Length: 140
Image: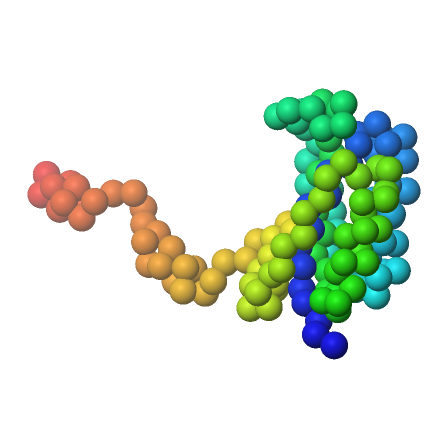
């Protein structure tokens, strides 16, 4: 039994989502948990006009989810998503385990900045005056 970590971007029918946001987003959690998966983070991504019509819809609601699932259960989850009336499209992507902490933190809208970046920023902080300008000001 090999467990994979997946990202899925679901595209909901905006009309279904507007009528019952909790029920539609909860259906994603139910689909994943019924397949034996564990949700790491699940949230609204965006609601916007589509570039082209999908099943007669011009507007969609994007829902981002990261989850763990046995790889052999992915086909079962794929089929369950195809049968869900609220879903217009969905896409599963396997995520490298080394990246999952940063991706989940970003999805939770937490800022993750590596320590070496912070050190570079701290060194570059100044008063906004060049050294040459300070010397010229002292000479006068």
